Image 1 (cartoon, rainbow, N blue to C red):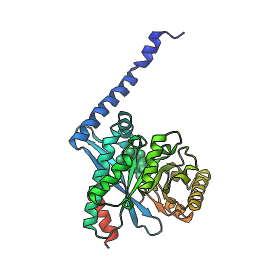
Image 2: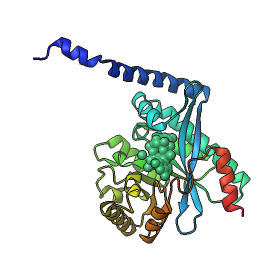
Image 3: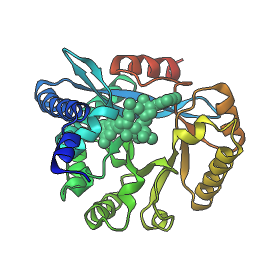
Image 4: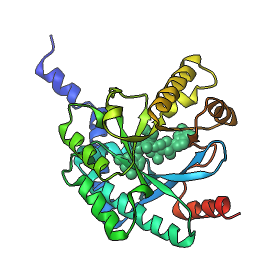
Length: 280
Ligand code: C2E
Ligand code: CA
Ligand code: CA
Ligand code: CA
């Protein structure tokens, strides 16, 4: 039979200890990074698949640590969510995106760029979330249609009343909502009627095997048919090859994003990208 000692041994197994230590270290790093300005935004183009023209960018947070170099959001976002740091971080990302968009509007007159902002379910627990979005836009003189908020399917689950309230407020201020990683969660389809959803982003796990797996390609076809019936735009995520692009275009998918078009770019490279594609 297992004794107390056994359990204690299991709990403090070195590998576990190392994981806990790494988490703590990361939490401390995140807190400092916010104060010291070590975060920056990267921008990945979202492209119209028939014209090849970008319609906007997804804003992706990056963390540069002076000692450890670049730290992936796959690592720091979960820690930020667990510690609540996702809230100040999320506002930093949004404020910075507003500043960048103002600069691009000044630099490239009349270019209709839209920025997609990732919003974690934790952020939607803030009772002032929708209000603060509206106030910020008013302050910097930008419109709701300059942005899309990317929320994950878990934000749509019925048993999150606080998030639901914010989603209703967001739709009342008419900021477009986008379901991220669509197909990987369990949101009930009926919820797609409840809030005006502007866009579905098909998770890249489906796109990855779209040309090789009939199961994946029929799932994508089904999502495209659903979106069409509901008059919702579709963005295919993670397009890496010409074959995937052509396959999706033939299925009638209108928008896409992925390394085939461009990696996420820092603001300087994103400016050069806009210049190249719009001003020729
Ligand atoms: P996501 O929202 O699904 O973002 C797309 C991710 O796919 C990005 O990873 C992007 O770099 C990557 N990607 C784009 N094209 C391709 C491709 O062709 N192939 C492959 N394999 N990957 C591609 P990234 O930047 O590492 O971000 C990871 C996740 O971290 C994001 O997934 C998002 O959930 C989260 N995240 C990033 N920035 C923020 C943020 O500002 N706020 C919040 N709440 N979450 C963020
Ligand atoms: Ca996203
Ligand atoms: Ca995604
Ligand atoms: Ca994801």
